[in-house]
Each structure stands twice: as structure tokens, then as C-alpha cells.
Amino acid sequence: MTAFFRNFYFFVIALFLALPLIVVAGVSVNQKQTLAFPPEGFSTSWYGEIFLNPEWRNALVASVTLALFSAALAVAIALPLAWFLWRRVAPWANIFQLLGVAPFTLPPVITALGMLTFWATAGFYGQPWTAVVSHAIFFVTLPLVTLSLGFTSIDRSLVEAAATMGADERTIFRTVVLPLILPYIVSGYAFAFVLSLNEYIVAYMTVGFTMETLPIKIFNALRYGYTPTMASVTILFVATAAVIFGLVARFGDLPKLLGAMASDGK
Amino acid sequence: MRREPPKTFGDYAPLLFPAGMLTIFFVVPFGTMIAVSFFQRQQGGFYTPAFVFDNYARFLSAFFGGVLGFSLMLAIAVAVCCVVLALPFTYLLTRMARSVQVLWLVALLSVLSLSEVIIGFAWSTLFSRTAGITNVLVALGIMSEAKALTPSFAAVLTGMVYQAFPYTVLVLFPALVRLDPTLTEAARTLGASPLKAFFTVVVPALRNTITATLIMVFIFALGSYLLPQLLGRPQHWTLSVLITDQAIYQSNMPFAAAMAVFLVLVTLGLVALTVVAGRRGEAA
Image (cartoon, rainbow over all chains, first blue to last red; front, side, top):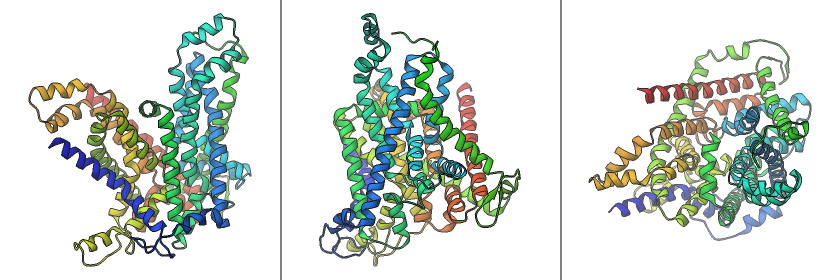
């Protein structure tokens, strides 16, 4: 009886989460350019459209490029910071930890508007690289939290042993710390990458008038009516996220990563 | 190797890049936004440096009060719905096999990472007349003809609960994993039904976690900037939507900045208030 109730509850939640995506998946295989469900006919041409139509392809390339660079920059900011906080006793440096978490905690519109006024004042408004920097700051929280967790799990006696054997700081970092922290670097990068790929408001307020990322392209297309390519892009995004998080779960400890994420994120 | 305080300049070197980046590209933009909120707006979308309170004075209108009230009400409704749905769900999830947990976590993360644009599009499709859920109901004979369910308040609320639900589960997850399982076992041994054990043991034990989660989901929902626009009518627009609208379409940066500063203050104020209330509740 209890098991039945639980399974029913989980089924309802699963249905709630999956239903919009099922309908979108159905719509994406319509033969003609109609918004119909159940789909009329079957065609995968709308998936081809993402890569063949130059407008959608450019948006895809822009999104992927942005996500690749901004996630790398976010890790480059987070790694030395997390390492410093682990290696040194410097309570005042925690202020930078707080600054790293703040953009992600505040409503995103605020970070977006701050970036917009900043780039406009600095005179760089609309340059593609400003979006990379903005996303890196916006998502620096994710690698920062995973890396802080990673460092706390390193056994300090390993580092001590290396130091006793005469290794200098640089050698210790390269041969002991880096191999141990690498899984956390990868998962932090993966989280930042997926979220950057999907981000709309910060990208829109920084480079919205000069280039289109996929979320911006979908939103602009929505305002001028409907095209099934939006549906196929949506499914592509969901699949990408599921694959990347699946890989993180496969090669890392996802429950542990998430267990730390919320408690550190506060 | 023990942690040591930094001594030489070289010890500080790793901090330079992160500290510089965060200061230049987060603290300075935040300050710029505050400065712009006091600037004077010029015709044609430009603004000139000044120190005026005009942008803040505009808050004292019935229209603005209505938007603010609606935003807060909507965010509270979303937070309550999400916690009510997610608390039993997360509790049961933490008691399942590890492989099942991982599967659910991957699914929840995938939904959480979705863009608001995509969530809005997916729900507007589901609620549309031609491809929506009403077609299923018609096919089942429950409804006589398909109709559009958006724009409406229910559609906005559903979309936002969809967006915030995975977030709620992930916030609750660590606390529920750490919850001592012997607590419920003891209650069960003493003869409480699983439902009674949940409400009389688990919920009270997690009171502080639940309060903290409500605040976090509330702030998360306050940040929703597209769903009210895509799924609702203009009277369902929230403060976040209004800020975007003023900044992009009305080109009134000073007013948008003033509203953003106000949103930060409201957010921080509510957090502080609840923290104080929580402390008092514990002390009593």
C-alpha cells in the first residue's frame, strides 16, 4: 500500500517533469511546419535544420563557443581562489568566496543589468568577449563550490609527505594536488558549460543586439511565430544536458557533489 | 602540509587573478548600476550623470505597488507549492537505492539547467490549442473541444513551479541525506504510521531547513524574468520582467537600475527578517 502510494507519487512527479518535453519532442518530428500534437507524419528534417540553416548554425556555434570559453575562464578564476583558501589561513580572503557566490544567488536580472551598465560605460558594449567575461563571473560559483569540496577531500598528509621529501610548492601542486583535484575541475567545468549554453538574460543584455546565441535565437523566433526548429533545438539541449550530467555521475560522485553544493552555496 | 598564513608577496600571488576579476567584473558593475540608478534620463535612451531621486520616486505609484505586491505574492506561492511537492519527494528519494537516486538527480539537473526560454516555449506548447494537453482530454472524452490554457495566472504558476521544483529538491537533498534514519524508525517502532511519522518527526526535525529552503526558492522565483511574459498577461508581469522591459525596450536605464537596486534590497531585507524570526523562534 505504502509502496504503491510512493510509486504513484514518483510517477506523477516524473510525468510533470517530462510532459512538456514529450510534447515538444512530438512537435519536433512533425512533417510540415505546423504546431501539432500528436505529430502529423514523421520527419527528422527539423533536426537537420539546426546544422543546415545558416542562422541556426551560427547561433549554435556562438552558444558553444561562448560556453567553452566562459566555463574555462570560470575555472581559471575559481581554481587559484579555492586553492589559496585551502592552503592559507587568511579569513579576510573569504570575502572573495562570498563575491564568487553572490552573482548566482541574486536574481539573474541584477547581474545582467550590472553587466549592461558596466560594458556600456566602459565602451565595450556588444563585443563578443564581454559575454564570455560576464558568463564566467555569473557561473564562477559552480566550479568554486565543486573545487572547495574537492580540496577539503584531499588528505593533507599526502602534501606533507611530498614536502618532507623535498618537493617545492610548484612540484607538489603539479604532481599531488592537481591529479587529486582534476575530477572536481572537470565537473565544475561541466556544470558551468551546460548552464552557460542555456543562459539567456545575461547574454541578451551584453551582446543581444550584435549576436545571437541559441536561447536568444529561440526567443526572437518565438516573437515572430512558430517554427519546429525551436522544438528540435530544445530536445537537443535536454539531451546534451542529460548526457553531460550522466557522464559526471558516471565518473564522479554526483550525490556527494550535490550534497556539498547546496550547503556551501548558502 | 599545515595551513599557514601568507607571509611574502609571492604567497598572495594566486589570489591576484581571481580577486581582480571578481572586483573589476562584479563589484564595479554592481557599483555602476547603483550609480546609474541616480542618473538623469535623457530623451532617446541616453542618460547623464546626476544625483536625483526621480527614479526612486516613481516607485510611489499604485502601478508599481501593484507589480511589487504581485511579484512577492507569486514568489511566495511558487515557494510554498515547490516545498510542499518536493519535501516528501526528496525524503523518499534519499531512502531509495543509490542508482535510482543518481538517475533522478541527472534528470533533475537536466531540467534545472534548461533555459527559461525553453521552459516557456515547452509549456506554451503544452498549453496551446493545437498541440496541447486539452487534445488528450478531448480524445479521452473528458472535454468537448480543445482550447488554449495560456495566457493565464495558472499557466505562469505552473511554469514557475516547473522551473523551481528541481532547484528545491537539490536544496533539500543534503539535509535529508544527513537526517538520522533512526528517528523515523523509533517512531515506527512505537506504532506511528509512515505518514504520521513523516509529519510528526521528519517535518519538525527539519523546521529550520524548510524555512531556509522556502527563502531560497522564494529568491529563485523572484528572479524569473521570462515565464510571466511568455505564459501570462501584462498584469502578471513581475518586477524582474519590468526591469528587463525598461532596460531593453523602453531604454530607460536609470529607472531599470533603480528597480534592480530596490529588488536587491527587498531580497536582502526579507532574508534578514526571516533569519531574525528563525532565531527568535529557536530561542523561545
